[in-house]
Length: 606
Image (cartoon, rainbow, N blue to C red; front, side, top):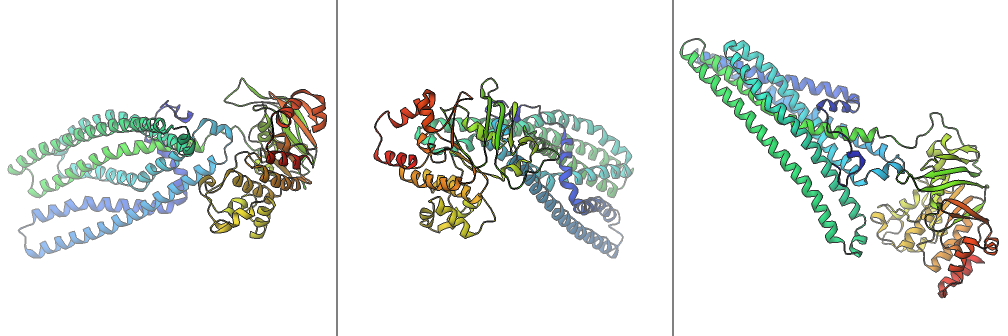
């Protein structure tokens, strides 16, 4: 698949069902449960193979008296009871194992993906990953919790049935063996086609999920640009492609099933015809023929079941490969084997030394070009410049979401590459331009900054961010669920929740990436005052387009096309002329200011 899917699709088709061996690490912890399931499996298979012997005894000794018949039928009833108990035990242990293994796989995949760097998500759509965690694991659940057990049971019955056929009549068994190659040929030939179609089907399902996820998360934008029809057409196209491949797979499997069943039962009829002639000639008893027929039916049924299950196993093998790719996905960033500890307390001295950086998706366009910058502990530094100048990239490098291609970034003199990312980020509070609000309560969203914080601390952080009033006015106050992506809140309210989250974190390094961009003039002035208090004693980096928010910074760094073109105080940079002075003229002197804008700018300036 190459149409709208991620690079995960740029790989060869599924291997043989041996790929299911990748599930063993998840099955291994439950070996006892596997043994119990196998015991029940072997027991029920053995009982199934014993039943024809009892039937033969009944047929051959039908005229030997009612007492003997009672014994035979009593024994048959006991066998049936044992079969029922064994089948129930097999279902319980196998199904439970499937549920447990799939739950572990889902947890492992999520735990791996959530730690991957942004480089991975540049290549893979989130909807595709969700498809792996849901659709692919459902296939595996079906196999581990059912199909694999049925396949093993039918394999045992097939093997044992063939042995009992040979014991019953070697002549008729020889005739049966002549039929086997004719049955195996369509299974092998069409099975390969099924494997390829199954993989394509799953790929298109993943693409469909990715398309739906992308557009549903941006439903308002789609509607605002009246792009519903185009979005529907795009989703319909991908879904129809998935259906077409599925229809081809279903047709191929139906053809294979028809061929296999016809060959199996045509062979059985032929063998029965010859066996009936042997009974008439006295070469074998009627009980032997009945016994042979039952074993032949068991063998035929097992072969037919295996031909159907084979397709399921192949689909599960493809799903296993796709999940294994996520589990083994290489990350552009790795923690050192022996990370260095940060000195305590963290001072917050940040340095970029000769940093060059290009995004993997844009290798020919430098985002940062030879940047050298030192930020002292407790200093407030503002990064300004036009869009694309590299401001947010600096923020991302400081959090080590990326590593520079040249130069290094240090914290308190330690290269970030030598630190564990969790240790580094635990000392940083971030307020992004587009804050993420989870479908949880307002309190839980703020508590993301410090999970162990008390309710009183959460409320204090909200008050400091001027978020308390609107949160308290929600139907359940701080316990009100804010909806997916915070749909219950306005843009400014979401921003203030994110600021409260950063206040609660109480980290020595504060990163503000357009933190007040979504606020109205009055809210901006209030939050700017809260941010100013928060920045005291902390190393603070402020990214802003609106220069009114950075005039009080200790130092302003002007970036353009990935380079530092000027630095200094607001007044010095305005006097110097150049890019900053031009930006300042555009924002402060060119065009009339509204009264709220003037008040907000004067508040910050003063």
